[in-house]
Image (cartoon, rainbow, N blue to C red):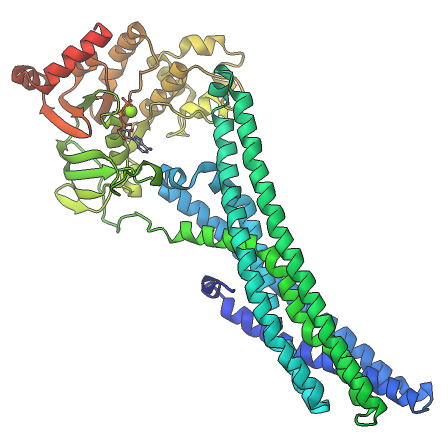
Length: 583
Ligand SMILES: Nc1ncnc2c1ncn2[C@@H]1O[C@H](COP(=O)(O)OP(=O)(O)OP(=O)(O)O)[C@@H](O)[C@H]1O
Ligand SMILES: [Mg+2]
């Protein structure tokens, strides 16, 4: 019932030890409270005056107050601990996501990761707090109470002892049923989160095709499934709480009837009988508490497992091999690099997923412009993502300066990169801030100069506050081409990043604008190692080295002259592309 991983949380053992001590104290106060109350009543019954009972009444009040005082202390301690651990987990989760990059998000789903980091962690906090408190209370308090009952009246003790395993057995059965339901509920919750996020992201497309209503209906259906799952979990929860209450009340009633009969027959004294009767509900209370909250914590348990499963994923951060700055004689070598996207749904029936990159061999050195050309789906973006360290190869070797490194996920490597994706992300902020993304210290003159190079002048002239206009989500929207120009400006502004990874950076531009932009861009590329993925042939004239890709393989590589002389894959591709593009 309790997750082993919980015990591995930092300081958990100390917290449990302090908690155990407090529960032992609490058990003594509970017993003291019962004893003093029945002493007072017994004495009154035997005809003593009320004044003589002050001692017992004060004793009762003190034990009562201390019992609740201890409870308050426990609550405070656990609350603080759970809050601390929850925020630490959230922090770890975020660090993991930021380290893991897009791959981790893609695997678990954006919506799911978001809800996990927000609601999920809150549920974990609740779970941590409730489960430790209830488990400890259940494993300490009843046994102290039971020993006292045995000492006072062994027959009642036997009745209570016999009922306990039955209740536990019953709880286990219902617990399994509830867990089953809660797992289903959690799965539909994750699906709902991802589905909803997808819809929000794709709202443009959905609207444009006039199918937003259908999609809305499908979200409604998913949320209905979630509702049904929640209700059915609640049903089991309520049923088990009811059944447990019923059984415990029945057992207390049996104890009471037996005690009453024996009182009449004079087989037991009033003090013992009364104390046992007051203590019996206390004996069951922790179990009832536990089962009542057990269902409430199932969500938290699932969230905790989800969080730990993300955290336990092997992080692909390479062992720190020092990576020096890229310079004019540096060398990078890839050999036998293979990569496949192993998402569960694109796995083919024989269990192996389709290879997106197959046996890539590649060597580049110094400052040069490397063009990556190929048809759509040939693996250009995958190769760029691999070079940027976003993806880690499944097999093969990466050598930097002749030294093997386990991956390119190294911070020192990534800090040298400027990456311009096919669809760059524009952060909500001013145009200037977006351009100065890699180089926040850029001066205004530098920004304006960069804007000129990438052809953003017209846009700036049009904007109400020039480069200080707010753009991005919720603000002034930009066209795809404008977003790409901003992304290009980001790369050009930061002179310290020597490796540029361009993934069709001009795909959204018309051919005339692209050619014009090319003339201004190419001179900036000197003194850099540039990887330039594109399916536009005209760029190849400017490249020092060309990699031709087809279906995940490098089918040809070399300088333009060499490839033209070869009259092989590159020339074939040129014919196909020329047919398509007319360039
Ligand atoms: N996230 C992903 N999950 C699963 N498969 C993917 C993913 N991204 C790409 N692929 C697959 O990997 C292969 C290579 O895709 P990639 O995006 O690298 O091609 P590309 O050459 O960049 O194409 P384009 O010119 O259209 O951008 C394709 O078969 C594609 O379906
Ligand atoms: Mg691509």
